[in-house]
Image (cartoon, rainbow, N blue to C red):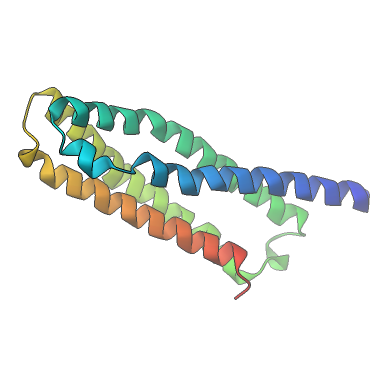
Length: 155
C-alpha cells in the first residue's frame, strides 16, 4: 500500500467515522427534545412519541456500529493498538456501557411507555417509566460526550 493511498484511505474512513459519530451523538439529543412535554400531553401523543423513539433507535444503533467499525479501521490504519493513545482505547471501551444502558434501561422503559399508553392508562401513572427513560438517556449522553472528549482532545 503506498503512502498516498494509505493517507487517502485514512482520511476517507475518518470522514465516515466523524459523520457516523455526529449522528450517534446528536441524533438522540435531538430526538428526545421536548419529550417530557410530549409525554405529559396525553396518552395519544405520549404513545406516538414512544413509538417514534422506538422506531428511530435502529438508526442510532447503525450509526454507532459504523462509528465503532470505522474507529477500528482507523486504529489498524494508524499501525495498530500499540500506536494509539490510551485515551482513544479508553473511549473505545466506554462504548460497551452505552449498549448496556440502552438495552437494559432505555429500550425497556420506552416499550413500557408505549404499552402503558396503548392500554389507555393516564400520564401520571407513567411517570416512573418516563423517569427511567430520561435517566437512561442522560447516562448514554454523558458517556457519548465523554467518549467524544477522549477522542478529540489531546489530554
